[in-house]
Image (cartoon, rainbow, N blue to C red; front, top):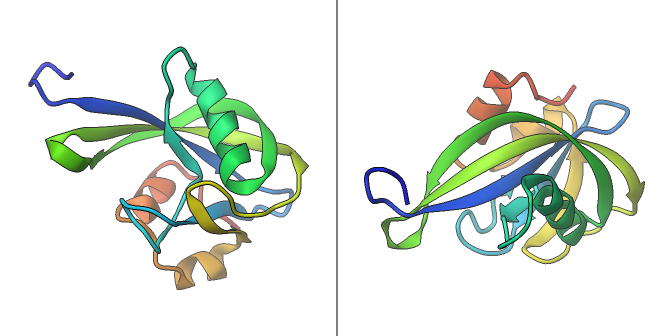
Length: 137
């Protein structure tokens, strides 16, 4: 709960770039944002650190394992029932795995700047990536 009595749900996201500067995105298979592209991520489970949650969500949704780096930014989004998703995004360096969608993602891909411009993104993603200097090349 926040000081205002609004229930917050802690979430994490992975800002992963490959060696060519492409950004890893997933197309959401469930609400919120079903059918739109977003960073891999999800809820932090009880007893999990943000870093553990980012690594788990990234592997579940994309098949990619990564080392989790610094926090790059935080956004809030409306959640069901008047709650708020508080999403903490972290830079990630891919280390292994074969890209494939899974869990809450029905597609996953590496996107360069041109591909990013052509996708239907979740609300606020482009603004956040721009503010954090995390856009793909």
